[in-house]
Amino acid sequence: MLILGINAYHGDVSAALLRDGHLVAAVEEERFRRVKHWAGFPEQAIAACLSMAGARAHDVDVFAVSRNPRAHLWRKALFALGKRPDPRLLTDRARNHATVRRLHERIAAALDVPASHVRARLEYVEHHPAHLASTFFASPFGEAAVCAIDGFGDFVSTSIARGRDTSLVVRDRVFFPHSLGLLYLAITQFLGFPKYGDEFKVMGLAPYGEPRFLPEMRQLVRVLPTGHVRLDLSYFSHWSDGVAMTWDEGEPELGPVFTTKLDTLLGPRRRRDDALESRHEDIAASLQAVYEEAAFAVLRAAHASIGLPRLCLAGGCAMNSVANGKIRANTPFRELYIQPASGDSGTALGAALHAWHARGGRREFVMTHGYWGPQFDDDAIERAIVARGRDVTQRATRRHVADEQALCDWAAARLADGKVVGWFQGRMEWGARALGNRSILADPRRADMREIINVRIKFRERFRPFAPSVAVEAVGDYFVDAVADPFMIHVYPVRPEKREVIPAVTHVDGSGRLQTVSRETNPRYWRLIDAFRARTGVPIVLNTSFNENEPIVHQPAEALDCFLRTDMDALVMGNHVLEKLTD
Ligand SMILES: [Fe+2]
Image 1 (cartoon, protein in one colour):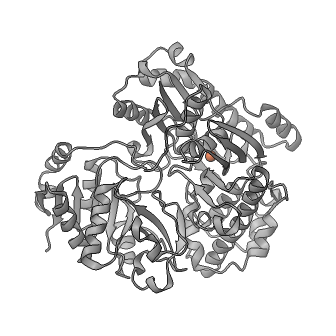
Image 2: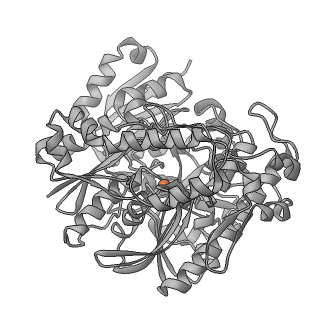
Image 3: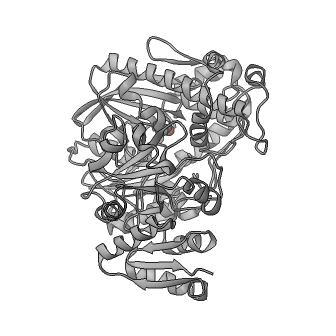
């Protein structure tokens, strides 16, 4: 049975394809469109998934869409009557719902099959159950508490469920307009980061500050003993003013979701081009602190309600890797699973898994790695290099290294020599993180590397941290209380005695957002890290996503573009090696 999961007309639209319950392909539309968080319809992602599976549109048994416009209609109606929001808010939402209800026509047009064919196979899976399914049904756990926390989807911002074998039973929900994701978004906007998805920048900024605004932040949000989140709505405008919100084809846009009362509480808001001052860092630190307090309270309530020691987490807030790394210390949960696309792109996977188990499908699939996207063989890579002609030949040397160990030794030597190396291998990553197949790598031992990459390669804010990829065997030698995480979604303290050893991947507060790399799930990347260890004694490389203010590169031509327009020193694509000529 082929099930195509689709996230459409939301942020980070995407597709995922299951064959008999096993994931065979998953990819975000932004990688093809070259615009971050692309909204609208994931036409190219769908085509790529079918192509990777060698399947045709006619073969698809179920089209599972991670939205359900009919969900919680009564609540929505009661809200509209009681709160009397701006009519624009209602019209915007009605338009989006109408688009989602006509989705079968859009899918049919994209795949060149009759609309009736799609309609007969179309299943709407509510947004939050799709989040829940995306984590629990991909996890190795037979039973677990399952929690999704995000901005909103289908009128819900938090849901708690009990997962057992093939069933997921939702026990509790937090409804619009109360939301922890919305709280994080509001302060992110207040701090002058207006773009969709900028929350992670504020999370990176937080360790530079002191949480001296914590008392003020606590006025914005509280968590009831039941685990229900409550915002003080006088600080927020999303529920009343008709926030401009676009989910059409293109970059998602959200208008401001906070009121001027927030300027009174925290001091004047920062405009986008204003200097970043210590006050802003303190506000970021206070936001992160209050978010953690609230999220842990929600999770403790979930534990009390479900009574199981394992937790599966999803939703945009599960991207908060700093909070994730502290869950075991701050809640009774002992084991945690988060799949790499925990944000909205992951709902395509969740909708598909939900549909599979709703049809009595067995649980056999566990997601142990994040490599579910397109790949390119050496011939395709060579064609891309040759197509760039003199752009390449005038600026770089080029050779082909067939032996994998020699290739890894070569790259490890360049890294140890302080070079920045693009590393393009195998299937592209699913989710927001580069996990060693579309990565830019460097030596973690060099304190100046952060500045070099932020300023000369990525052209981004100087405060942004870099992450370590560590051979899984050595994780305990370098990090405190860390467990293996192939998805780079938990931050842990670097051991104090190791902070001097790997300064480029140790954040200002002594932490690191690590990825563990194993021989089984990414043999070539593991071998590279091992070659670096053999040379330097350190089984870690600095890993940042292969891009420059754009989505992660998808195909060789984009990797080549990024290599040529930045100060990257070398590029390894498959077995092809390029090295810039020195002047
Ligand atoms: Fe969501």
